Amino acid sequence: MRANEPGQTGAKTISVEEAGRWLGVSRNTAYEAAGRGEIPTIRIGRLLRVPVAPFERLLGLGASANSEAA
Image: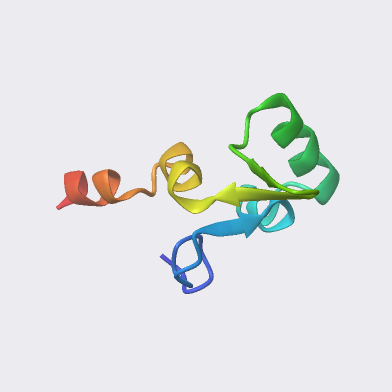
């Protein structure tokens, strides 16, 4: 895992734009996917954030995926 992947900074949430970068899609595509529920999000006031744990599970990067590989 690269140092700038979700969960590596210790942050519990990331921006929708950052989630889009991990998926290799544009900012607009990431927001569209978030709007459709394809990227898990939470709303804090007007701010839309992606919780890292569910996003990692979606990508197969969660702790359970790592323990299965061991």
